Length: 286
Figure 1 (cartoon, rainbow, N blue to C red):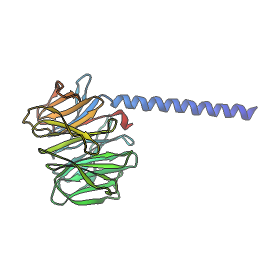
Figure 2: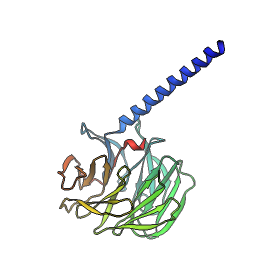
Figure 3: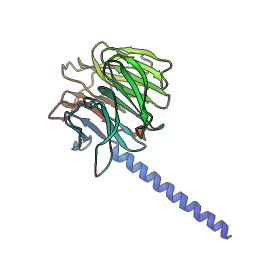
Figure 4: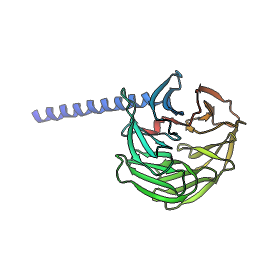
């Protein structure tokens, strides 16, 4: 009887702990969902989509930040500093945000992507001998996967299916396995492009070019569609997809539109300088 009661108490404690963990994880997910990160010429900012409150999180040193990504497992924001030749990170959410040096790169790191599941950080460089590189989430075991790429600027990961997508400034999008087997070009750009994202739910790629066209294709590059023509000659340095919405930078404005063709633009925020990249927290990241 004593053993039976003890076993029941242990099970009750484990159940209580599991419930607390679930509540904690859900609260953490809710604290991120509905928020954007924005990088401009000097800072990384937090933007609350519902309240439209803007908070400066950290100064990055005016080195050029063209990509942001998040490690949902260890809770760090990562970004490459284009002119500092490094990748830095900071804990988020945190009451005391401090910028940490993560890894030194070769010239002009442009795009970063975090594999939270397996504990790796990937990045591409925009320089002669453009590279795809990787290291562990503690900054160790840095390796160069591939060289000789051309004008690489963005990298995205499909961790579940083990695919790497790379966008080339004026060429198109390539797709390969994590070990760079099955490498192929799957989409061609008709205009200079540096902002690309993946919707893993709908299994489609989205990108915006310098003439303001937002295009989409299947993840194999088929069925390319022009969703929106903004007729804007401004800089479009960031694009993220969440649920039925597309968020993108139009010079110094943060715009939200529905994925539907010819949807109406909605200006969420107007910055004092050009927006260089954006990141939308996604519930699937949890």
